[in-house]
Image (cartoon, rainbow, N blue to C red):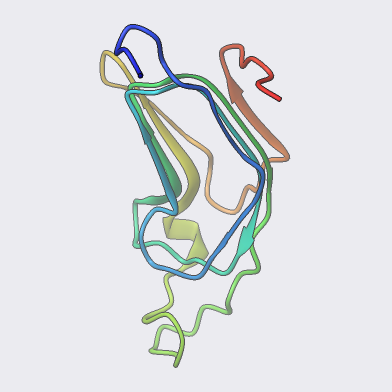
Length: 120
């Protein structure tokens, strides 16, 4: 049985998506590891593929997507393309309204905040 004062550790070893919303939303969590991402997700402007809120000890590695060409029109698989200068790979909102955004067009090999514990 889980007790709120004893947070779970989560390790996700890979992810591939083609949707328009954040692929992973991490909220009020601790000790989260996502080891690998690929896909052709194109989020809406000013949003991110990975949305982190009020969490600590986060490790996300090998963030690489297969971008679709920006055509400013509908395509047949995923809706309206969004200029890649307008969205982020990671937005991390910490307690106290601090916010960090991985700059558009950057695909970090490692995004880390805090210290994660190996749960394997």
